[in-house]
Image 1 (spheres, rainbow, N blue to C red):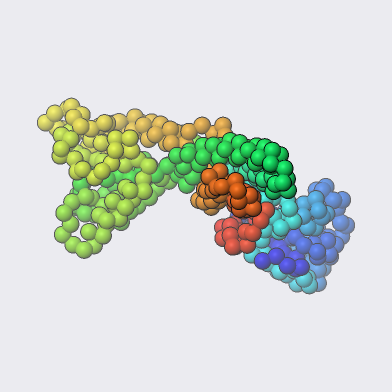
Image 2: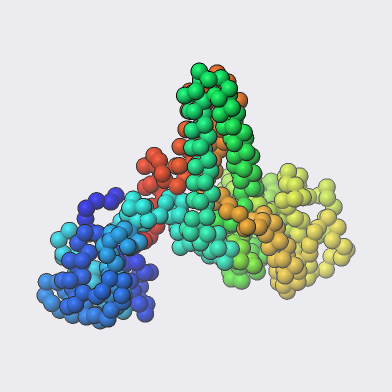
Amino acid sequence: MSDASTIFALSTAPGRSGIAVVRVSGPAAQNVMTRMVAAAPTPRVAAFRTIRHPGTGEAIDQAVVVWFAAPLSETGEDVVEFQTHGSRAVVSALLLAIGTIPGCRLAEPGEFARRGFENGKLDLAQIEGLADLIEAETDAQRRQALAQAGGALSKLYEGWRARLIEIAALTEAAIDFSDEGDVAASSFEEARSRAEALAREISAHLDDGHRGEILRDGFRVALLGAPNAGKSSLLNALARREAAIVSAEAGTTRDVIEVRLDLGGLPVVVSDTAGIREAASEVEREGIRRSLAAAGEADLVLWLTEKAEKPESIPPLGFSRETSLVIQSKSDLPHESQSLGAADLAISAKTGAGLDRLIETIAARAERAVGTQAEPALTRTRHREALEGALSDIGAFLVGSPADLELRAEDVRRAAHALGRITGRVDVEDVLDQVFSRFCIGK
């Protein structure tokens, strides 16, 4: 993606706003600045200037201009920021004017961040944290993403990688001193001892219940039940808006409808699903299939029932009590018994009765799933796969024959290589496009 051209883009959200920021990065950035403002500002000092078209001299806007000389910039290149008024007309005129300067072109998605990566300003794990920070919807997501963007995960993984390099050095020393049996044996035993300790740490990091991924993607709650059990009404009550159609007609909900909530700073994704029953049509059968699939992917299933049913009357869908709750809905209606029976909670989406307690229960389950944030958590499948690969290679090193020292050294090198792929130190060309394409243009 990166080349010798100078890139530019609007870095703030499109549309009318008080301020808009247009960024320029590359070898022609200084030329852009000198051709469009009368007096170039001192590097890293904000200056108020009139911005003019480089060809006609027409004034475009009066704005704040900041100049960052390479390598002291986010991308590691010369960078200019124009902080203009945020009207569409100003932004459009400024972008068109920059585009007339030779060597300048509009940036592609994530290209500013990618140039920063290629110039050693950020590693790949930090950039993924930056992407999560941009997407963060809750305070807990913000904290996790900020820690990752600040290098918390990178420091952990690079620390492990450095230890693997030391283990490799000990193993290669055993090869070098193979004619001195005691020295070789001692060096290899030290390498194995260190590898065992590191394997325990990586295993503990992997065995985290996916808390980082749950926090990043959201704690998933699926609403299940028979038709007209009150699932859509509950979804609307939780979302505090008409997110789903509510009707007395059975089978109204045919597809999975999701809303994202912020419960105590934690992201929660609630899914309304089609009613579970013997379907009469192919369309309804597909809706029920999708309902069960959503339940299978959920961290918590809420089974809604109108009455305080006996346990045997609730479909045995295979959900454990750890990952499911039975909710007696429509508690405002008269029932034969006011006992909860098999239900864990009674609610009324109409009156709001019991909703506070239900929300507290969901939030508590989500908090339990996320756990404490004292230690950096895995946030991506890519990281998990690389760590599992490294752990497998360390395992091969530990169980392999000491007689094949060259192979054991290769086991350690493969493990270090796997860890290096997380931060982008080695061989990550196949994942770069996927990572940076998630960014908006201008970041």
